[in-house]
Length: 225
Image 1 (cartoon, rainbow, N blue to C red):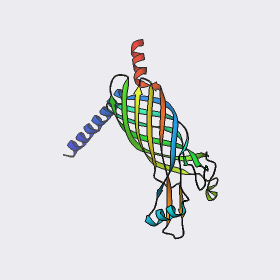
Image 2 (cartoon, helix red, strand yellow; image 1 turned 30 degrees about the vertical axis):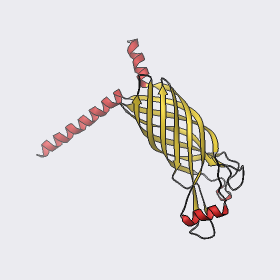
Image 3 (cartoon, rainbow, N blue to C red; image 1 turned 45 degrees about the vertical axis):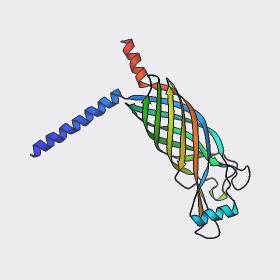
Image 4 (tube, one colour; image 1 turned 90 degrees about the vertical axis):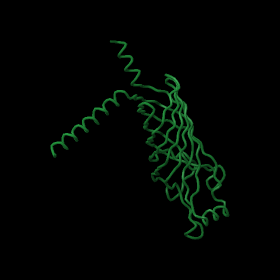
């Protein structure tokens, strides 16, 4: 009985390894570079008292901050699914922070990870809807002001991502929605229960170009044979 169970487990492991190898061979791997523009601001989180105090004092009548965005992206596609990750230089912040035309913003080096559904309309045209998350650290201050108590300190960003991307041959055009989960800043009014938390929120539109594609390399090798 024990020998039968061991043999069964061995067969299951072999099937998993074999299936994984087939998936890797049949899957498409690609590397792309993208460039675009990010529009962001800060959204407010707090209890009813904190939100009332914010409305009364009017300290955070924030407006949009915008800056460029560049990234490199690795994609793993298999049938109708796609997994993507990479490195991104993402600038997030807000304008009119405390005073008119004073912006507070930081550039973050982030690692996004998204899982998506891919719809192919033809050999060259496809559409992907994806969701996931991203995390990173600040590498530069790009706004005109900063909070004195945090001057020179590294800031961190953790958030959710929702995206849509269209592809035609080697070119892509997409948009992503960023929702920060960690507090960027907080402000306590007259009482401790009146604490307002500010978090990043924004969207990015971008253009991309695929610089390497495993399926194209495979086809090229087959032609050379």
